[in-house]
Image (cartoon, rainbow, N blue to C red):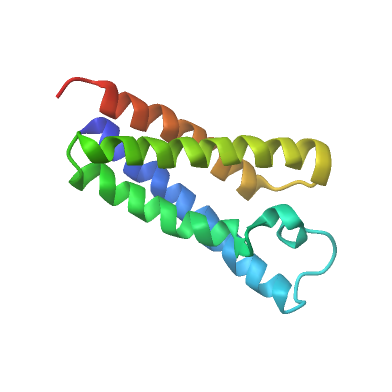
Amino acid sequence: MVVRGLITLLCGVGLYTSLFMLRKSRRAERGEVRGPSVVKTPRAQLYGVPNSLLGAIYYPALAVAVWLIPPGAATLAILAAALFAAGTSAYLAYSLLFVTRRECPYCWTAHGVNWALLVLVGWLFARPS
C-alpha cells in the first residue's frame, strides 16, 4: 500500500510538470514564448505529439493502474510503459545536457519522477502477493 501511495504521489508530481510544460508548448505554438526554450526543439515532440501531452496521459493512467490492475497479464504492460517512460527520459536527459543545452527544472523533475517510477513499479510487481 505504501509503494502504491508513493507511485501515486510521484504521478501527481509528473502530471503537474507535464501540464506546466504542455501549457508552455501551447504558448510557444502561438509565439508567446520569447527566446530559446526546450518546448521549441524537435525533441519536445514524439511524432508531432508534445511529450508533455503524453505525460499528461501517462501519469494519471499509471496512478490508476497500480491501484486497479492486479498482478498478472497486465503487469507486463505497466512495466513496459514505465520502462519506455524511463528510457525516453534517459534519451531526453542526454539531449538536454549535450545537444539542446538548455536549463529546464521541470524536465529534470519529470526525468527523476520517471526513473523513480520505474524502480517503484518494478518493486511493486516483483514482490510476491
